[in-house]
Length: 312
Ligand code: FAD
Ligand code: MG
Image 1 (cartoon, rainbow, N blue to C red):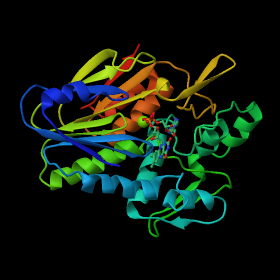
Image 2 (tube, rainbow, N blue to C red):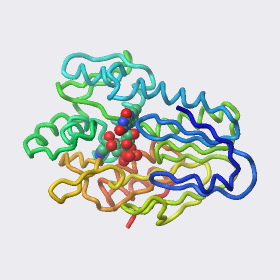
Image 3 (cartoon, rainbow, N blue to C red):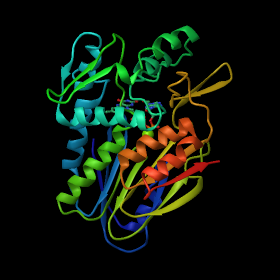
């Protein structure tokens, strides 16, 4: 269901409370229209100087139908189902995202890994039926997460997961990619100002700066620890506090260390990446959360227009 509201900026200031961050808008007066919609299992919100946002939500819904491993008929689900059996031909955008995700895995020295589905399933992150897997289960599942076991055929646009049980989960990159796609589409539609917020993956653009405030991890929603002023950039936060469960007094969260198959050690409670590309911000907020300091320098030298804010 799409909720549409026409709002003045000052009213907006009170309303925009995000999962990883808030947006505090400057008090100039242009009327923006805000809407929200649940897609990718999360609340997506757009704030634009036009009243109908349906076209953009349709783009997100179409992406979900192709990319979600949870939807049996999606291209990604089909690739996963045929793991160890045969290559599957996919659309250009699916091929592109998977190729990029695998490339990022190498670039982040394995901290980002789009092949963690067998691990995600063991823990129940896919269904919400959480459990702590045994060491042996984790060892076996880790065997199915190697990037070198994926065969991409550029010519025929096929993806082949060569071992049975392998599976793609693009949860760590898709919201960023979708933000970038929407931004490009809006620009080509002549929309020169706006805010896209896909479950905390924020992209702001236009001729003024926006203040994005960062949520304090494990605190009441709305508690701010820091804020950044941005324009034509994406702000993405990853944190273990976003999704987790406790078993025998121990807290487990959804960001996995691909080396161990367990929740990544919380080197930081949260990592915020500010970057002109939302895809890069999404990938690296997850990867730096996993790997910590080691990746910080590499990231900043590869993406000099970017910034990293860690907490604590
Ligand atoms: P991020 O830090 O950006 O990513 C963490 C997520 O990426 C994890 O949840 C896991 O899926 C994966 N991941 C974990 N560790 C790593 C790692 N080291 N490297 C790479 N990836 C990793 N959720 C639902 O509950 N219901 C749905 O119906 C649903 N549908 C979705 C459909 C699509 C197309 C996508 C992309 C996601 C969907 N989700 C759904 C997932 C939900 O939106 C996730 O919460 C979100 O993708 C995780 O993003 P994040 O910003 O919280 O965390
Ligand atoms: Mg991410």
